[in-house]
Amino acid sequence: MPQSTALSYSLGVIASLVLLLLPLQRWIPIELSWVETIAAVSYAWSVWLLAQNKPVGWWIGLVGTALYGLVFYQAQLYAEVGLQAFYFITSVQAIYIWLRGGHNQTEKPIGHVSRQGLLITAGLAIAAIFILRSFLIAIRGAAPFWDALTTMMSLVAHLYLMGRYVESWYLWITVDVIYVPLYASRSLYLTSLLYGVFSFMAFRGLRNFQRLELEQQLQATEQ
Image (cartoon, rainbow, N blue to C red):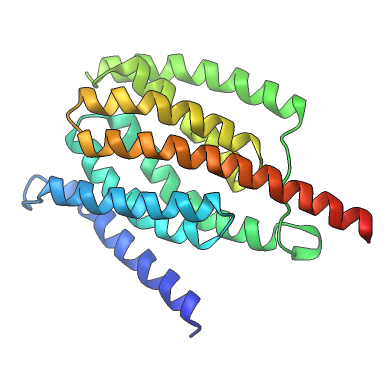
């Protein structure tokens, strides 16, 4: 088995096992401070790799996603728990899209979301925010509006990043800035600090994607 495949398989197994611990948290003592630390490191590594346009970042992100499911469940940020589950499932699909989503199953190039796509996404996201907010109020979640807003923004940003779209980084910059005070209000100080760092990483990702897109265009004109 190639080294990259073995790494991907190992990380996937570890993340899957950790995700399965979520329903057992009431009976199994879990030191969430350690969980949050490991999740933060995994997420930071993942975001850095994706900002560098490296597909392996999706696999590293599986570990952080599963662990943050535990952290957010404990903090009663239930929309964020659902978001982590969504991340976990779609990150595997993102690997295929990045590596085989181009013409004739080649690597997918960096691109842009169409204007129509942006309008449709915005309309659906706004409606979903208010629906999710009502649900979070009903189950007494913490900070229902901000939890719903950041959840939907993150979901859209994630989908855009799956498609290797430049617009994903604009959304990530915005949502990461909002996450800083939200997580601090729930005493998730390490995570709050981490998302402050993520906002700078997202800016770096935006610059990298713009540079790589320009290189793609130059290569296309030379051919």
